[in-house]
Image (tube, rainbow, N blue to C red; front, side, top):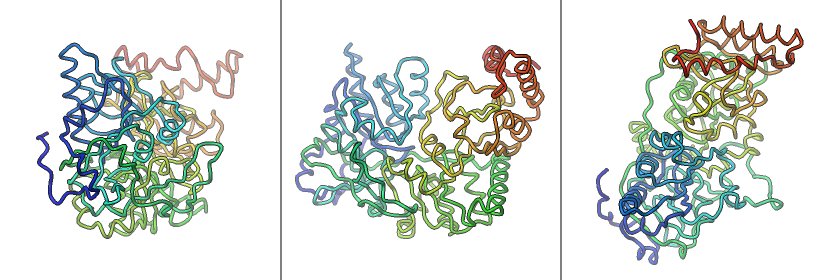
Length: 516
């Protein structure tokens, strides 16, 4: 990345006193100390600080080269980008990371035991900080689009935990990014009504597009110790064209939803949609654009290309999220038609976008990805072979446990067919069978509602497992049940404990889950 260009005039810092705090990224980074807990903005490649983390990485490297220890704890909204996670991980600058990450260097350091990582439900992060569960937040580093004359802040392309970071941090450093359009002003809804127990009140929201807060972030100007002006883009979120597996998964879901409407379990306009991040999720949203449903609503945590397309076509009338994370082409469409989208998009703090109370009240259809599911409907969405973190649970648990419909999706196999994504027992559990209603692969859809564990096992094998793995899965179930009948196990959830994770062990040893 190139060095920051000189500040662009006219300044986006309308507050006279704060203009005196403008400095270089290196000078601002020097205000962060070894051992600090640093809350940084950013949610899935949107709205993260871009200059200060790189300057901080250089600062840390200088200390390490001199034989001095320098590591910090980094708290964010969710994943960020190479300029933040990657830069700090590369120099060994993080001793703790939470609550979600997707950077390969960061992931490698976590899995090598060189960095601690706490995987937290996204709706819990802000309140854990309010409660003091995570220790003191020393510094907040927040990207904004501008500063008003009275000191209020125009949020950028994500809100995430920024409200909490600004409230709780001892000192605040701002990046004012001229690369964001000022047309974002008015799109945000920052709710300041949350309280600690026992003083909590209901969140006053009854539909996805309702505004319950204000368009700006607040911050005591005296806490702001530095401001850095930048002109740098968010990380582009590039999506591949839907492959055959993704299209088939989307097709199964469309057929299921149409049947739910026919049976009266869903209204014709469905219920507000939550969609996880990734190519499968975008394929599902794309199929909705070609489907029969009208007057849709979105209530999610990240607004991606597929949901913006639904807004553009008129299929969706309103979408709420905490971040906008788009490909370069779709971001151009967004910026060029901001007046249209500002009336249809609300960006909220993640403590509201992921709030269990609101999710339950609105009755969401939650659609999220997974790594694997087992025969009884338990889902692993975070760990490869049980021990190696991929990204984290993110917000999927917030939505799955509280949604009207909880749906998990994946191709039925991975690694060229060497791995079955339907296994006897998941190697790590993020979402128990109690929170999983629907499992979908390209093979089909298993509706698990109202089924006992033993009923679920046959349906998941029949509908979701790849044909190459069905005989072995069925053999496992039958032998587990026979073992239980012989008095060597329980009949409620039959397992062969010495074999339950043998598929994963075999893959680790041979590169294949099956012996043939």
